[in-house]
Image 1 (cartoon, helix red, strand yellow):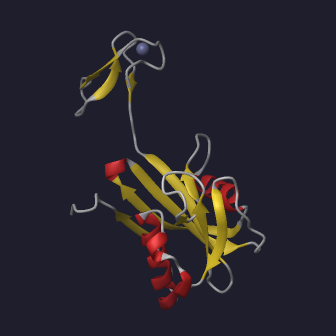
Image 2 (cartoon, protein in one colour):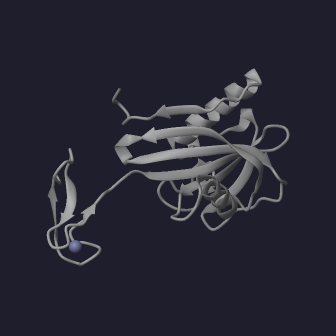
Image 3 (cartoon, protein in one colour):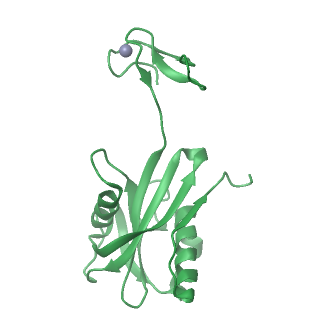
Length: 181
Ligand SMILES: [Zn+2]
């Protein structure tokens, strides 16, 4: 950022007193413009047989690839509300009793991905504006080579493993830049 969003004057990158890293600080009104990770929230929705709802993206990045319905949490929303809203917007689908399922930190892009899982209310889902297609996938049909994001791959792998065990935990992990530990 170059200008203060409060007063419009130029900002400088400095370490504020008592802080331990550089921030954008307004030289006129002294406001510190903190930049923090953004949350991407969404749902793994499944039917009674365990088939999973995926959406084919109509927008960049990764247009044409398959994803779980998810998107950025909005101000004024709870994480659950955001996850359900994204599922409604991208697939016109709703879930019974969504429960927390996966939390994936992605420090190198400053994002935290949070996914809930739950049973689809019915099968009348259909693509929203940001999806080209919405469909249910059984374990054999999951398009592993056409998934949009590593977070989606992680979540689907955990779900299939958990379903085999008949035991669903909450999965927390971090993804690092490909090629880095
Ligand atoms: Zn200012």
